[in-house]
Amino acid sequence: MPRIYKAITGILDYRPPRLRVVLADERTILRRGVRAMLVGEPDLEIIGEATRVSDAIALARCLQPDVIITDIFENGSGIQAIREMRRECASVRVVMLTSCRDQELERAAAIAGAHAYVTIDSPIEVLLRAIRAENSDIDGRRRWTEAPAEAPLAEITAREREVLIGVALGYSSKRIAGNLGRSVKTIEKHRFKMMHKLGLRNTAAVTRYAMDNGLLNPESDAQELRPARPSSEN
Image (cartoon, rainbow, N blue to C red; front, top):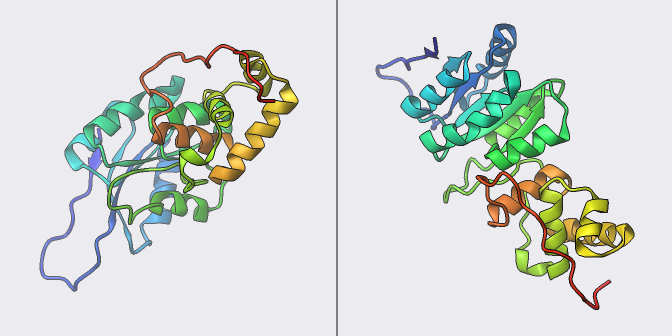
C-alpha cells in the first residue's frame, strides 16, 4: 500500500515553499535510507512512498508531487510507467535512482520522460542536484540535468542534426555512418562538433535535447535516419 504523509497544520513560522517528493522503490531499506538523507533538507518534503509501480502512478495522480524518485523496478516496469506518471502529473520531475549502470536503460529512461538518471553509488550531492534542478524554470520546460543545453538548434548544421538524431536513438557511429553514407571518422567529427556547440556532455544529454526540441517522438517504437543521399558534405 502506498504511504501518504500529511503535513502538520496550525500556526507556524513562515517557511518558503518546499519541493514535494514521492519515493517509489520496492526495496524498503534503500527507500528508508533515501528518506533519512532527504528529510533533513529544509527545501524538501517527503509526502509519500510507494513500493509498487501502480502505487507510484496513483500517488502521482492524487498528490501531484514536484519530484518522484523511482527505480527501474523488476523487468523495467519503472521505465514503462514514467509516461503514465507524467500523464497523471505533467509537471512532475522524474529522477531515476538505480543500481543499473547501463547506457541503454539510461537512454530508455530519457526517452520515456525521466529528467535525471542517478546510480546509487553516487554522492548524495548528485541526487540533490537532480532533485533541485530547474526548480525555478517557470515555463515548465524540463531538460536532462547532467548537461542542460542552451545553444539553439539552428546553430548546428543539417548533417550535425542528423548525427544528433542518430546518437539520441542509441545508434553507434558505425551505423550512423552507414545510414548517411559517410565514414566513421567523419561522423565522429560531426558528433564532437554538435555536442560542443550544444554544450552536451554525454549520450543521455543528447537524447534529452532531441526530445526537448521535438526531434524524437517518445511514443515511437522505432525510428530511422534518412537514407544516404548524394552530397558534397564530408
